[in-house]
Amino acid sequence: MPCSEELCNGLDDDCDGQIDEEAPTSGDTCLTGQTGPCANGRVFCVEGALACIPDIRPVPEVCGDEVDNNCDGKIDEGCVPANNGCSDGTREAFIEEDIYPLIAGCAGGFTVPGILIDPLPQCGFGGGNTGQNPEGLGCSASDLCAKGFHVCEGADDVARHSPTGCDGAAAEPGLFFATRQGSTGCAYCTLGDNKDPDVCTGGSCARDCATSSVTANDLFGCGSVGRRPPSCGVLDRTSGDLCEALKGPWDCGVDGYNESNHVIKPGAAGGGVLCCAD
Image (cartoon, rainbow, N blue to C red; front, side):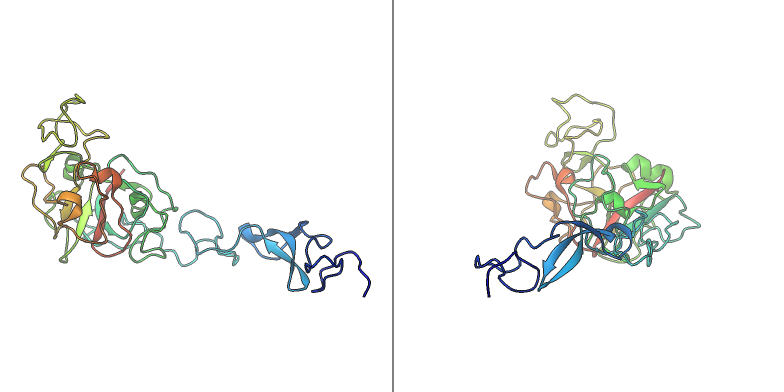
């Protein structure tokens, strides 16, 4: 067969030892026939035939972003409208909504590190242990809270939102719900107003300090697992060094003075965060 222009036919038309490379119209824009972000694509030669391959492939639906992520013509299908403080619509602590309308314990995972400084939602509030992404892949701690709620700032924020402090929080064993409470170490929480960076660090064990980006020693919250801090307002549980008192899937990294800036939780078990109404 004489050599000719390369076509998309499963043959080496131009006799260069390659099949279907640089076939005419390859790379041209096209419409895939799918919906949402998968609608636009480009032409490629696939197994001897031209095909319109979408520029964006379907992915599992992300709740709350108002995008048809899986390109099936529906937006946020299967998502639970959350109005109880948790993004997946289910509470695992402070369960009685009539008693605790302004605070919720929301279980689930998150893989974007950090909780001390207000973490921005990263997966469209698509986290939660009963949601579509229980391990929190690509989610921050804030994605466990519903819109209109935030990860509680610390002991004072919990006291403002819960009439009983941590009492009544965790209904089951093995649960810890973190806040954004800071600490200078020795399980002393930052409940004061001292902002001196030479005194108020993650390893000074100083009292009367205010929370800052460096007062990140350990995690503090409510729950049924963890150590009991000697001084942290209404909060009754702490993680211990490098989350050793919580165990997996809690992972506080390798810096024993900076856990709440590095923490991730790549799994649904073991609790999550406390969410306070805005």
